[in-house]
Amino acid sequence: MKIIGVLLVSLLMLVSNVGYSQDVTVKIGHKDSLYSNILDETRNLVVTLPDDYEATGKSYPVLYLLDGSENNLIDARLVTYNLKLELIIVAVSNTNRDRDMMPLSRPSYKVENPQAHNFLSFLGEELIPYIETNYRTSEERTIRGRSLSGLFVMYAFLTKPELFNSYIGTCAGWFADMDDYFTELRESAFNNKETYNGKTLFVANSLSDPLDPKQEIHQSMVDFSKKIKSALGDQVKFKYKTYENAGHVPYAAFYDGMKFISESEKDE
Image 1 (cartoon, helix red, strand yellow):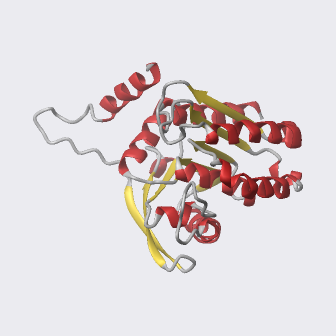
Image 2: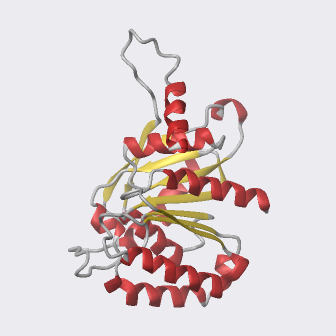
């Protein structure tokens, strides 16, 4: 509740220069887009730049925000504002969420045409090069997903760990009937330990998530936590955090994840 209160105060500060007698208009970023040959469609983006971007000439880390709705982008701006982080935020809007975020279909979550491998290729081969060509970026990249896109973050971590430095998955994990698929991914991934040197992974789940009544997703992350620690040890900075009564997608998890990443970077 303390974190939520701080974020609400920050939102008021962001709009404090707007008169109460006026309509409140807050610019949260500028629209951008690119056509994807891989996905055969145009993908809409909203890009938020640090306040001093034009004046400094500096290069900035990039936060790639999946499920890039306006509300999620506002959350990201509030979190980075409170943590005093200077980032370029790239919010990626959805077109076909199930198709893009799911690498498989199972009875627990049926998807007609799972194409997460294509969406991951889009990120690595098209979106990231586009952003790094058109904006002043450093080599630091973070990806954040929530719920279904949180599962995608885990998929990306296990299949293309070199794409990002840091990964945040909120309500991330999988149901029991997906264990065989992700176990195979994990075992193959952790055989290439050198690709995980210096990576950061923060995962969070609610213990009162109505979409995980049997705590299958939570259990998948408990098991994963043991495996990543035994296989990779200190190569990866990893934290799994649970919230007792937070419902689906704990609000504080985004803040806690970005804080964990920023503190991990300071320790290097």
